[in-house]
Image (cartoon, rainbow, N blue to C red):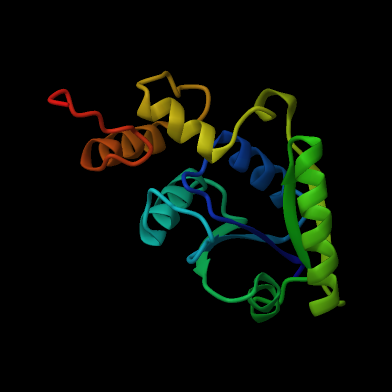
Length: 171
């Protein structure tokens, strides 16, 4: 079986991620969307929430499984029998980071290939950070995320002050 892993934080998953995963799934027998548990950045959603949102996004695609992981990405890929790690590229700065990551991962796991897919033009502007900021400011997310992710974002932002400046009117 030809298996690939598409790793990321997916905080939250958006239509750009879904596009890359759906296209990658056409190239492999099985694609594992791997949600990293311990990113080096602040996340809005727990790993369980991120996994659940991703699972719902791919529930109609039997070739895509969603799992969380907390090891080196290449170790996770090895443990799943994957021979390829998928990454998405939006802008030129993505290339620089992905190239560096591919080289170090190739050093760690020479048997695993790295495949970058260019984002579809309609999603080139999307990032999870931008989606969270638009949501925090009450903007329209309809073309950016699935409905269940939009609902989860607005619910979570009501519960927290993540990314929203808290201003005291008393001062």
